[in-house]
Every structure is written in structure tokens, then in C-alpha cells.
Amino acid sequence: MQLTIDYFGINHVLFGTDAPFAVMPAGADEIVSNAIENLDISDLYDKKIFETNYYHMLERSIRIYIKLLKKKLVQKKKKK
Image 1 (spheres, rainbow, N blue to C red):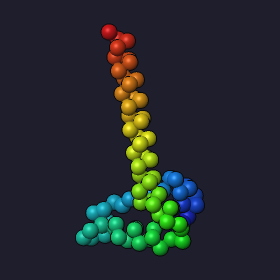
Image 2 (cartoon, rainbow, N blue to C red):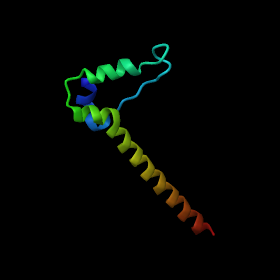
Image 3 (cartoon, one colour):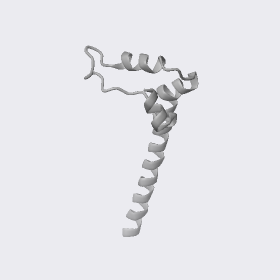
């Protein structure tokens, strides 16, 4: 995990698993969570991995989607 943070930077790492497919019966959530929590990183970095980075990714995705919708709407108006 530390190598991932060092290589990609804390702003590009977020919590996720392939649950429920990894470790039965409930997936790897607990294993991955424990690995992150056992890292020698600040509480701010923990929050980024578990929460903040997800919200930033979601915000960017929504902005991109709205931009594409507006572009499509403009193209549709030009065709008329």
C-alpha cells in the first residue's frame, strides 16, 4: 500500500475491493481496511483514501458528464 501511495500520490489512491469475490464470505473489505489503517500515515491521508478522494472523483465525473451533455445539446440544436 505504501508503494502505491508513494508512486501515484495520495490524491490518486482510494479504498476499494472486488468484494464479494475475494475472501469469503464477506469479501476483502476488512483485510484492505486494516492494511490501510496499519500504514504509518496521517489521519488526513486515511480520510483521503477512505472518503475524500472518492468524493473528488465523483465531482469530476459529474462535471465531465454535464459538460458532455451540454455539448450534445448544442450539437443537437445546430442540426435543427
